Image (cartoon, rainbow, N blue to C red; front, side):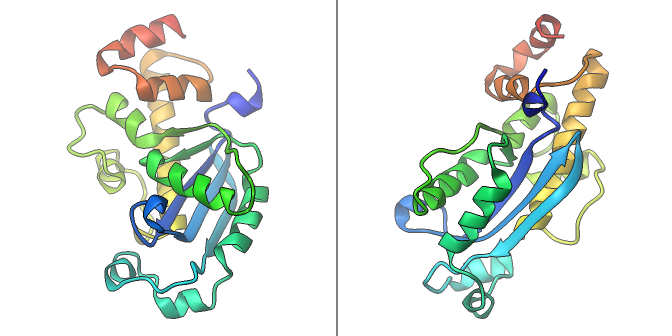
Length: 207
């Protein structure tokens, strides 16, 4: 299997944003990402992003990112050009990936990059791998699996680090439960979309 399809060779990313959707004019205000090689973090990326307008009090309190912090930051387009080089053509993972994918695609389009690499969602995978977890929020899954925590949530780099630890834990749990070898990214993507009841048969068919 090519290294690029190894599920442990991915970029794990997270955005903090001004709101819920770029369709409403929302922009990214921070991006954090880690690059994994065989499940180990080999490189990180983190930067605040000035959206060109002030954030509201709710977002400032939720993320801890204030307008005074953003005034000193580079504009979104500049940051995303740097991140595009960091990401390259790596597959990527995010928790609640549909949210992050929308912002990544929107911010990339603003720098005239109209395609993004393949991606999948750690939250959807966790719903299939850990159906008995009390919640599939990132913080709850980290507690459920007794994963070593970072100092805080709702900052992009900390959340991407925690997501990467959850991601590698899920893959190791699959390998142990089903006695599999290397897990491919394409297998994890299929897993995120399948019915929970088909889990066992899936890994019997795809050892």
